[in-house]
Length: 257
Ligand SMILES: [Zn+2]
Ligand SMILES: [Zn+2]
Image (cartoon, rainbow, N blue to C red; front, side, top):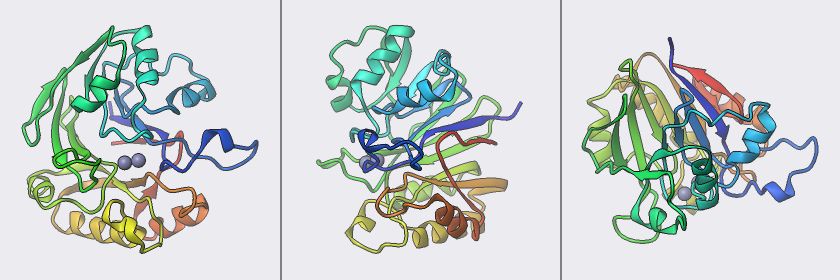
C-alpha cells in the first residue's frame, strides 16, 4: 500500500485564524500527517483542521509527533497536551519546546541527533540543519529525511531557505520519493530570502534534485508554507509552480508516494 501525506495546513505565520471570513480562501499553519501515524508539527491550528475535516478521529492513530522548530506556527504546547489527553505518543522536539509543555503526561520524548539515522517504530529519521535560525547559535530549525516502513523516503524541508551545504551532502546520498520545499515568499526578493524560499529558488532547487537524482524516478515535489501577504492566490501559486512540475500544497491535499 502506498504511503500518504495529508497536508493539515500549508500557510506561513501570517494566516490569522481570527481573521478568517466565511468563503475566504484560507490556509492553516503548516502541519502534515504521514500515514495517519506521524504528525509533523503541531501548532495552534491543528484542531481547527480536525474539527472541519469531518473526521474527529483523524489524529487517533498518531504515534509520533515531530516538531521542526519552536516558531509559534509549528509548535503549540496546548495542542500537544490536547493530543496527549486522547492517547500517548513519542515526541521529537528541541529542549526549548519540551520545557514549554507544562503537563507532559502521555508524552515520551525521543531524541533524533543531527545526521544520525534514528529508528522510531517502523520509521527512520535523519535530522538535518535548516537555514532558518530560531534565535541562537545551533538552535536552527530541522529538516528531516524520513524512511517509511516500505523504504520509501520523504524529505520535509519546512521552514528554511535553500539547503544548507551539509544538508545537501546528505541528500545527495538519498533518493527521495517525495520532497516538500518551503515557498513562503512568492515572487518577492526581499530580506526574507535569507530564511525562506521564493518561487525562483524552489524552481532552481527542483532542477538540481532532479539532475542529481536526489529525487527518485517518478518522485514528486511539493511546495508549502505560503505567506498570505506574498502568495495570496492559490490559483496563481499552482500555475507558477505547476509549470515546473511542482505541486502547490493546499489544506486537505493528500499525496501518495
Ligand atoms: Zn513557519
Ligand atoms: Zn519558522
